[in-house]
Image 1 (tube, rainbow, N blue to C red):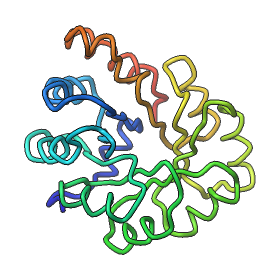
Image 2 (image 1 turned 180 degrees about the vertical axis):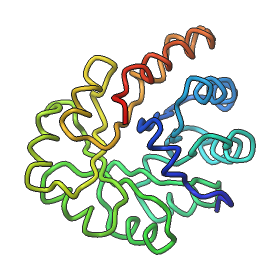
Image 3 (image 1 turned 90 degrees about the vertical axis):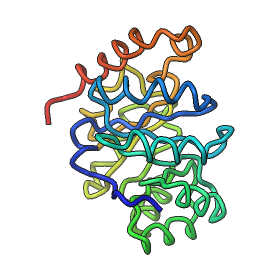
Length: 213
């Protein structure tokens, strides 16, 4: 397990969870300094990325100053064990698995489980989720977050899937406590072209759009 705990202070500075999926360790080595320098603070490496554990371990050992490093696409307790052994400071799941949530709560590891319906979302929160990842947010959009928050204003929600530079502010205005973003944030074309400086500028656009907190 990571010796350094997840920092909510860091997260709240830039409440965006960047999702690394299918990138190589060499690419991640280039991305992390740019990510931090742009002002972003929280990033997850999905467990279905080749060498995910090695990437998480590298990130925690070499780049965790100023960054929260987590594991995503954690679907089982076996995934969770591997993620925590690699040093993940927080856990994100695409689905609601009671065992995974309870294990994280017991270990005091922030857990953002995926849920979609009001009942699933409330159940995830009741189990002790730190925030609930509303996934997929693509079809329903910001209005769904607003509707959920009206009767369930105590919930902390992290819409993920379909969040982009164009609609991110709308999600925050609707009451989102953070957002999760993959390809919209970690631009694959810029990464393939190894245009790291342009990628940093791209990251900065998201920071500029964040509502003042």
